[in-house]
Figure 1 (cartoon, each protein chain N blue to C red):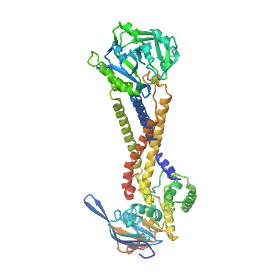
Figure 2: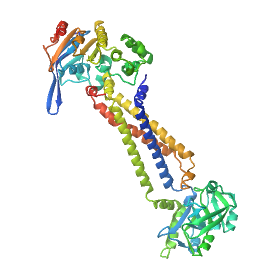
Figure 3: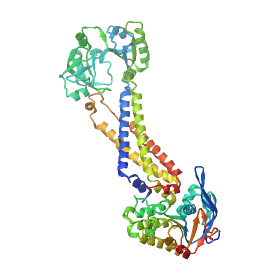
Figure 4: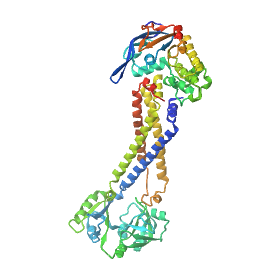
Length: 381
Length: 242
């Protein structure tokens, strides 16, 4: 026998309790990893170089307020702007779906081409899209998800606007941060709505990242004291503010994660305390045989660490495998496409498990250190 | 301390604080125990005999006085030094055997040796020698629950002997055994003492068990009945008559 065997035999002496402890640590770690991944997915800003070149202009009052289409002429004249297109969220339900599984935007196809830098056309023809006002440009993920092909029809029932769309797929794009969206002609939307002369937002590409702030300032200034004052911001800032409309997601998920960790800590501390409490007499015997406080602390810590490490491996590994090999798009009906359990999140889960093992070992170790051999021998089995 | 004395106690007192009340467990005990003796500590419950045994074995501390064991004043040792000293010098035998239930007889006996720098093969030799000494060489792989009470106590004795300590302390070693097993256990303890290699100090209520010892002393209310260094000793015939 060696010390490791002794520790393992002690840790597994009550197999049901050990299994339940490992399981509770595993489930909590899996939950923690899932929450941290969700938090990252919901709050991560687009980090591509192209995203820093794009500026979104919206109504200063709120995102829901439209902007006058005539603003385009003013925007075209602002120095530093390379391309600009209307960008209006349609929000329709595809086929018989009851929720909006992916976004549809009305754009000016001729101008929009200059805005997409990181993507590429993976099928069909962009020229075809530009020429046919009843056509659309579709993301590769959506094509794959619904088994669509070039020339197929896509019908959308309007939920935000009182009109429906009947579009022909002209081209497919891929390679962007989000390959789900559908883009169609703003002119079609204008026609259907009776030429009301508004757009949702303006989508701008600036000449370089270094002039982005100047362009934003110029755009804001250009519409100051008009009937439709605007708020221009980078795509990254816009997405972050859009997420904030959901509430403080970071705080919410952070709070839930803290509760998970705290509950996990209580479970582990309680289990370790019980496990040590019922072995007080045996630990007193070990003390009598010559084992010192630090050796007994090592035993308790190793036992606690072993259970936590096993639970963490199962929980974190399980969460990684589940989120890596699950068709998330199908599972969440398109709400989430990517759910990457990063190395950083795995490391965070592992650190939490290690800290937990140490914290769980502290209270029983103090109790054992304080216990005299004579007191321990009096403890009932 | 005389060279032949393994234990020399002078003016030893132990007072427990229970709330605002002081309870005297031992009062000015002075006692010498010779090397190779088999001493039976007798007395009614609460007389302080277990407390005295615990102090001699270095698992309890006196309130005052001196307790020299093998030339070392154990009352002056720090926590870690005392732990090392116990590992090398004292073997423990308890009333309830106190074996670790998840470990085999072999592993239980091996426990004190894990603190030494001995290699696995050396440990194995010592463990098997100790188990064979108590007649349980063939039960090495058995768990405590697979052994009888007498066998468990013999494993505990093997554990007490495996580090080859000069002193073996036994607290009511036959208290949980039937008469046959008690006889066997006492015979082993007696043989340790008779071979001259070990000093055995045993706490017992049982005059039959005490009769195996070479000397018995009586405590009452924390004091030796006749007081003084070894003066409390009574001949075995007297013990048996009682």
